[in-house]
Length: 220
Image (cartoon, rainbow, N blue to C red; front, side, top):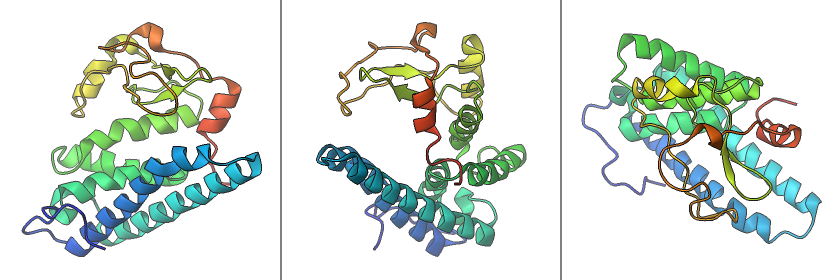
């Protein structure tokens, strides 16, 4: 199945077949992610819901496994190797991976950042770092992770140095943190208002929220 974007191919790409495969998998991944809420809302039992969630998690992990196999073949997901769009998909699969796989991809990214920060999707580093830190029960570094409380309101998972976080983000090509806009999961359109994130937007994860966050990150 070809990518829906006819301009994904870049002349001189070293591994166009892998770029094509990554984009195809990314479309499948996003299709599953977009439809999760609708499908889960139609389910009537907790057992049915949990079975479906596990099925989707298994799909995410299978795609992540294939992504790692591709990285073994190409080395580094640079724009030169697989094109810009496909290079961006690698971080998507990594975020849906087990924590040991996230760390493998992050190590590749961090090494390439030292060599040439503009040769790959450097914007992927902050969310990977934050996902690991939160999973290990530390405060996130870059403020890329928001979550939703039981009342349907978004909150920023605490940042270790909120006052200076935007200076850290800019090095990796990220804009300052802004309040999230959400049109799904029952949240209001602007659950926290508009504009830059504020210290008061932060909230610690409860035990149940943390358990949900790490549910599919650690191997059983």
